[in-house]
Image 1 (tube, rainbow, N blue to C red):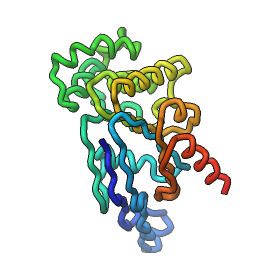
Image 2 (spheres, rainbow, N blue to C red):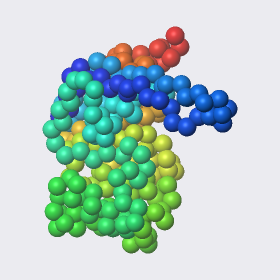
Image 3 (cartoon, rainbow, N blue to C red):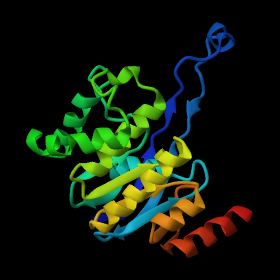
Image 4 (spheres, rainbow, N blue to C red):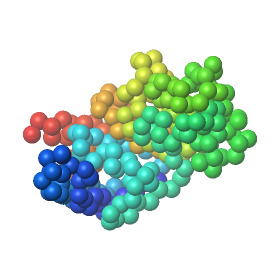
Length: 240
């Protein structure tokens, strides 16, 4: 379903915009920002029905990898192949149009997945009920709290016809009961043959949800294997 072949993401050197008043008065240009390699030579593949947990410290390259996977940005070198329809929860409310209602955003998300309005309508009641937004679904989403955003985004992602679900720390938000409902829904998604990519710092969540693990460190892939071994490698690596 997903293949990364020698993928590198490098951000070119740039001149910092602006500068301090002191540098402006001294007619000095601000210093250039050095080139930065966010990911380097990453290769892996994920088969249909597998669940991959991505681990790494802050700045390891996890979010960059997900942005490449979901085509938010393009690799500098290498190739990425994705087969199937993909829903992503990279951040709360990402992809929603803030001036549209929650109901309208559900149809928008379905259209982006290639679903007909009739097909979305068949799932509409289940999506709204899971999100617990029966009384707010016709309000513009700009009026939603972050928790309401999360509930709607997650519910859309797991109820529409996606082959691949990509989640970046979205389950860290919300109360305990809602997180448990989310995990149960993810398990159902997997039982239906769905493919999952999950970034989380919650070991128990990763162990319960994922079969495979991938560990990043400073933009490099340091481990790829079973989730238990990946968690062990990650925590051993952190101690070094």
